[in-house]
Length: 301
Image (cartoon, rainbow, N blue to C red; front, side, top):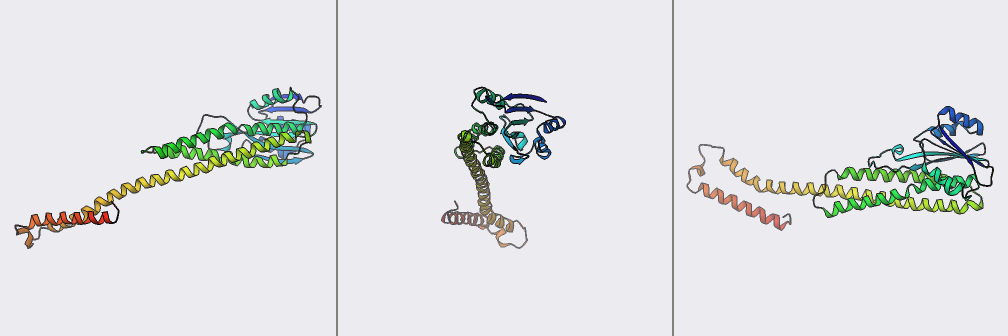
């Protein structure tokens, strides 16, 4: 376990940042600050979704920060994001996370040392804002991926067969991000701050609205793109079946005639007639022409 502590500027409020603690170590922290044991269990769950609770005059919430990974096949909340648990009241703030988070150092450098944050609630809002900010750049990256797949679908004649896999992962990732953002809304609506920290809270809410809109648009565009891809694939299959059907319709009556004269019965008058063979070929040609004219009038060709 790695523990870092510091005081907010010109206050007695202590910020304790804990990285990768064990259950025993968290129990010691719980006894020291009189934390609720059930919320402590939630803070240990790596798959826990964003939530907000209040116990023993201590506020507790969980947010998930988006991890910047090159892996395009992320399908679960744990693969896509990392959990940050926060306990705070008027006297202290505790942040708990499994892996080292660069945003904690950024908060310390830009907010604590410069004296921009002087309350535990304001510090909590800053943590929420930083976690939300981690969703910003990936939203535009996903939007660019949607444009890339759209150009492939609409501008290329031959659509790669494996494209549907990429569209699926794109849809899955945007859907998970949207889900996490919607759940984070409960945290934003539950945090209470003093007047001096209200502008910061409003900034976080504005950023949240912007991100939900972006991911909602990406998710909708991905769904539409997936439906268009499936429609084009079905159309391509239909075109192939149409050609095969046309060939079968043309050859069906010809095969029927050939089948009749291929039965080799002894008493078939056409077998001994001098005009039997050319008349049969002529009949086949007339049938083909009639079928062709019929197809043209029906606009099937």
